[in-house]
Length: 364
Ligand SMILES: Cc1ncc(COP(=O)(O)O)c(C=O)c1O
Image (cartoon, rainbow, N blue to C red; front, top):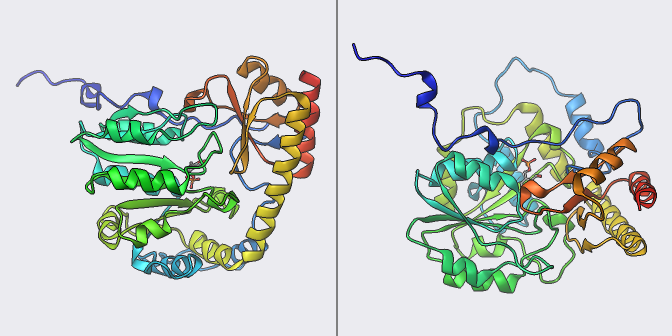
């Protein structure tokens, strides 16, 4: 018998630990702390969600083997513009993203992304064997380079990742830019349009992917219950797309995909419009407060359409992150997202934001 190989020789050569997603640090011990590092909802979770979880029972029984109830509720939530069959749910926006990558990428295919952007586009695509083609956002306002993306499209391009509002910059892609890109993108390329922060945008130039999907473009919108809905720990997300793509993606779902508590929580969250409205209002007020404080302190920031700010760190980023951490304020160094020298700070509670400003004052 031939000599057998060692197991690691069968590991995929393009899957490395350096591609693994690293989350933020745990909260500092023995200190009142404010987590401004993961873009969660500062106001917590809807009381309706908490109530439904409290009242849930019969955990010995498998949940529904379909996400139909959620899809119907999502279709209504998005003004009945799309059919429930055009929605696809998963255990987080990240999972829907990964499902799409698994469904469309074969080894050697190309994906186009625009750094700085959400790291998993890179990690998930690399894991699937894709070649990453980076067409960076340009200028200090981090604008999408539409012409650069069009030039980068090749016969191997399968996915173009767009994010609006973008993490970590907080900037949007205008509807005019999307129109320009769509008119020049071959129809066999999937556009993944990540809009998990859409509720926070108040720009007239902003559009979700709804109208584009309705027109039949091959766009998959990615959405999440982790942000404005305040359900990050429950892991629920969804996409919406053309019926053809949705039905194909459904083949990649596991049986009994979403746990019963999360489905109930998602339905309750969708029914509580008041909580979302309060969340949006809080974010707009605190966004204004923080931007005026950044200006007072001379901190260079990018005006945001999300629930976080990207700031230019006035001292080395690791020093800023560590010094704030020692004062109980947790923020995120986003060098790994393609933004060296920058730090991302989630808009928190009134108290958390004041603590941040106080800590920044001390450092400066
Ligand atoms: C741009 C973007 N997309 C997707 C996600 C994924 O959210 P989740 O997996 O919690 O639904 C995040 C989370 O931070 C994000 O910032």
